[in-house]
Length: 153
Image (cartoon, rainbow, N blue to C red; front, side, top):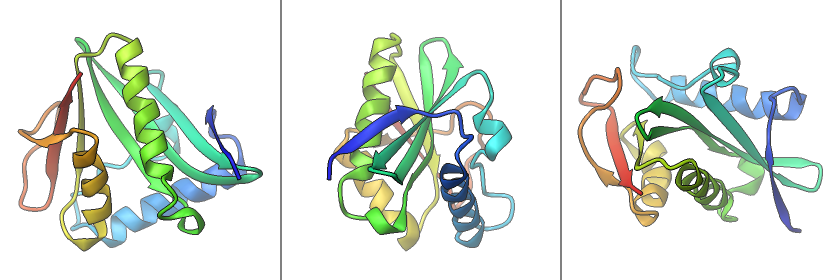
């Protein structure tokens, strides 16, 4: 089945359930104080744009782009629904986010993520798309757990 990317207002219960799964997973796989995933209200902030990827009536994934100002953006809330793993969902959403950042004239995309086996598939995707490890950005502080990746665009 073909996938469709939609700009999302987060009102659909299926999208909210995927976001809840994402937040729960971040808390289960991160040390206390090291979860920076946005909740529903954070994703509704005016500087954040959210997209979902759909397979028919099923939400297959989610991702967001947060404007940091000065031509910079941050990738947020990347999550593939468990029923759609290893189908290219994350790559499609990330490619859309990168394309949107280019259209908006951004010169750099950044992201913060964790360490360990749970985060390895996402790190592989980010590196395959050209992101490289770098310094903390925005209000983040470096810890033994988190990692920062950047893509010059």
